[in-house]
Length: 392
Image 1 (cartoon, rainbow, N blue to C red):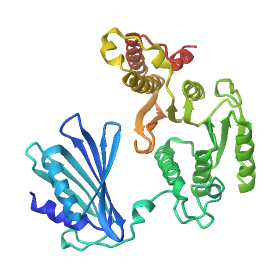
Image 2: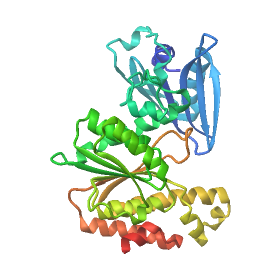
Image 3: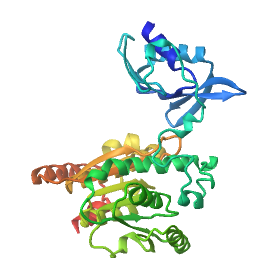
Image 4: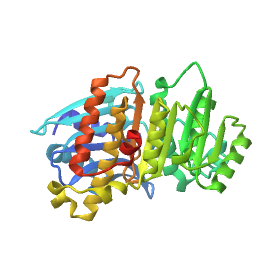
């Protein structure tokens, strides 16, 4: 095995490791990804493998010697890439067809990588990370919503929610350049529910970034809306309000700069996207949910050998639904990406549609995008709600 890689493993396999991700498998079937992180078991330092195989996730605990041998074997035989996050080191290791390694590392702490010394830190490092909303800093809305304790500690049962909120704020951070700087930014959150994200967006933009924003959250549940408005008043969030209403029928605005939808069910996402497009929203962030419409419509002779299996049909329908939505947004002049929202281990509903309005629109490219999406719609014999709404 590569001596440099052996030394690298000796350096990082300690308490200073945040995680290692082994990915890019050589075969399409079988294990798709492996995550490795340090844990303490009865005061003994171990390394937990989280192994992803199809829809299944397995966990195995190993000593440092055991996990080092496994990692080396994985890169020789089964995988092409290993990413390392450590308090001192960030690195990526690539493996070619012959199992030869290319190692790229950078020093993030001023400590030499090749010395063999290891920084011993609390294993809480695996949880704390560099989140936008810092753990240990009391934030009123997180406390009232049950995510934090009064001293700023994250409630164990709500840690996934805490990570989800911070992940979403990272997406907000990425699109800040697209939002107006010379006036109030108008944001709408359709289907806001308990409004974890709505409060987080307002807190981040207004309190931390000192931006002039006005946010409206909408949901069908009157008691939820009433509670959220009470909290908004309690915190002094003057430009954060919540209203009861249906996305399809909402006519309260003529313009919005950013439209957010998190898990709006089935075609509710389409109505929200349609509103955003008609408002010429600069940014759209949408995490769809329960994509049933296409599943009922999908009728393609060429795909019948695949579609005869219910679970495959369901998953393909969900993916097709979001891909069509993304392409329709492209045809409307948006730079559009489909991104992983949070790890699959937390929820399978983890695709985020991110669309940013282009400053300059090429009409011919728009027509090309529309032609492509119409061809796939015709091929699959489907009638997506968003296409119908845009035609109208």
